Structures are given as C-alpha cells and as structure tokens.
Image (cartoon, one colour):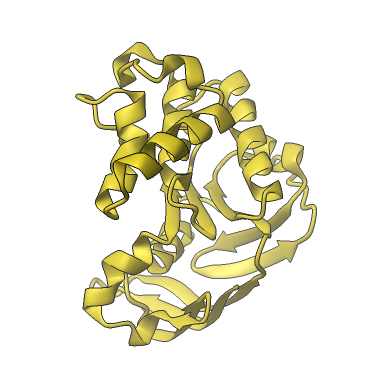
Amino acid sequence: MIEITNVCKTYDTGNKALRNITITIEDGEFVFIIGRSGSGKSTLLKMLLKEVEPTSGKIVVNDMNLGKMPRRYVPKYRRKLGVVFQDFRLLKDRNVYENVAFAQRVIGASTRKMKERVPNMLQLVGLSAKYKYYPQQLSGGEQQRVAIARALINRPEVLLADEPTGNLDHHNAIEIMKLLDLINQKGTTVIVVTHSNEIVNMMQKRVITMDRGCIISDEEGGFIHED
C-alpha cells in the first residue's frame, strides 16, 4: 500500500509544486496520474522514488516511512520498485537479454537465476525471439517492452511508469498499455503518469487528476473529455 498524507513541496525558487496532497493506493491497484505540465505529477513520482523530499507531510510505501529511511537504505528500496521511462534508457552496447539481465546483476543474482528469469520475462513481453537484438535494431514499442521486462525482472511490488507511451505511435501505445494491464492482473501495483487522454479513456482505470500542485479529482473508471 502507498499512503501519501498531507504532502507539500516548495522548491528553493518558491515554486509550490505540491499542495497538501493526500492519496491512498491499495496493493494491486492500477492508477493513472494526469494533468498538464507543471501540475506536480513528476514531482510526486520523484518523491515515490525518493529523488525529491517533501517540504512537509508523510509518504509510506509498503509500511516504509520514506521520511525516516536512512540514506544508505535508499538504493535497496529503489530496487523494490520497477520504473519505466518515456525514453526507454536502454544500454545501447548490450543486447536485449543483457539489458534485462543487467537489473539482476545489480542485485547480485546468480547466473543460474538469470538464465531462468530473463527468458521468462522476455516471453511475458513478447520478445523471446529477439533476445540477441540490440536496441537500435528494435522499434520504439519493442524497446519499451525491453524496458518493462527490465523493470519487472526483480519482481517489484510497484511499477512506476512515467509517460511510457510518450514516444510511441498509436498502435504501440495501445500494446504497451495492454501489457501493463496484464502485469497488473498478475498482482503488481501499477502507477502511470501520462498526458494521453485517449489512453486513459481506453483503459477505464482509477484516474487522479492534478492541477497546480493540487488533486482536483480522483475517480474510478475515469473518463476524460477533451477540451
């Protein structure tokens, strides 16, 4: 469970990025966070990653109070989160298999465990046949699938996706969202930050809308009307 309670963030510039945010996300939920640029979405995601500290308020992720977490524990905490970015962030000098295995190497997994888990994960994202391909040999949609496989290989309880379809065409965007939905059905909590009203309307999940650092709506099966 993720509990964000009365969280505010004011940057040194005086910019009030978050204003008294309170959100509870249950285990296994699929939640969209939407809003215009500057609404506070990215700041909120960075707080969950413990890249940005709140000015006030409390954030608890799976019974861990992030405000009281020792700095030395932060890397270990982040390994329990899966993170997917708009720009994929793949290692260009490594093939698909090695990109996914890299996340296992970071936590010191054995070669035997990697040989077992990586093929299973590539099968889940539909890339078993392309395990020897390098990122530049893949389409944008395929690169994002590799990024998702890498994010999931260590079996995180929470997957954070920041504009995961931002660089993709319509077809690939839909395929990626179907994949995230499948991952969610297997028990992973999924939080997606997006600008795409079309994606949100297609998925019919919980939608938290932000504006100028505030939550202006929080609806199940939300449907966004174009302005």
